[in-house]
Image (cartoon, rainbow over all chains, first blue to last red; front, side):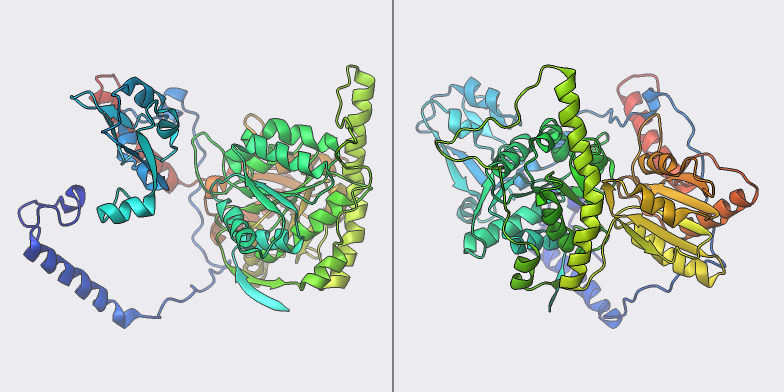
Length: 166
Length: 414
């Protein structure tokens, strides 16, 4: 049985291990490992399927597509802000890092020119990079007037933080 | 012979490596990126000499490729789908420069809606550009056709750029055993490019591809490009024979599979045709004489070979993994034009299938064969058909139901 320590069935949404506690995490890992081990008996039994005979086969249930007006037949999503859920920050190889000691708070420069709208302005007037969505194009680093945005290779940034956005 | 398990993308990269290309202008795009990553690694390690340059777009990339080719060096480049379309202005411009190079396209369906998996609308959009185009069904064919493409592109009787096409995912990311020919054997088959008057040198200015402001010279240059593309058919036969002598593999404008004595023939291009071959085997076990005709080269279009291969068949089903909106299957229309007026022409049916990587299972091939032979026996031609099932429509209805809920949440009437 998988223990979720009071967060119901939403562990996947809040992130692995967040708020679960060590004991629950260990119990979940045990469950995962035992499920993995249970597959051992089936090791190596994946074969190519037998050819499907052309003598006796299930005929495809083809259908003629009806015409539908563009209001129905256009590929649209009507819910707002769905692209926020796509973590394009995973694509990044170089990470822009703001040196706040040198930042002039001319936030209209970096936040306007960011092609992914990934630079927000904090309540204190300082820019902040949303690493979940920053793709690392470094336009901000190029345009920053006081040269206060550095470019750090993602693998080095990840080492410093022990994880990183990726 | 060095046999390796290679993806279609790696086979394309090996083709460029064995051709000893001088210059690779590049730009990444799924599912092609593995090709330029592989080449970049080889350049970096010094296993390839020459230069790989990352351009800022495919439009610049194709411009750089043709401009470099116009200096008389051997050029390779690769793209896919939206990237090929982004380059389209130059794709139509550079064949008229008559500077040969090879572009590998890894086919992927076009937006909208945007997708990643394969169909052929991207490469078919270049159909009228003056690029020659060849379609591969196996990883071996990819490697072989990069080498063949250079021979044909650089031949003084042709001198046009060539697109070597492979299907995204189904071929680009599938590993198959590939015979890697020895470098010396490739050098013998494909000697260094003799650029003749295709050259740009310091202090020797030349204006290539100048403007003409009248219909007559324009017609001359355009039709000469067409004649060169047509001439490529006979050049291709000659080079295919040399390729066979050098490497022992048969190639040519058409690949046929059990079609000689077939009553019913599937016509497909690319990797999807291998499924048709498997289906033909099963159909033969069930007593249906089925076969497959797969055009490799679409430009030049092997009309005479297709007429010869399809004459006297009862039924031919063209399965187009492409769609010309408001018309239908591109390959069907071209084949209909080729067969028109032929006294023993077969019944010719149009099937649209495999769009955006949609699988075509064996049962659909069986059912197509059965129905087409039925139509042919009654002397009828069926209307064009999309391979689309009730189950797939239910899946779409589910997505549409979600859209309706979204609209309601926004306060709109559904």
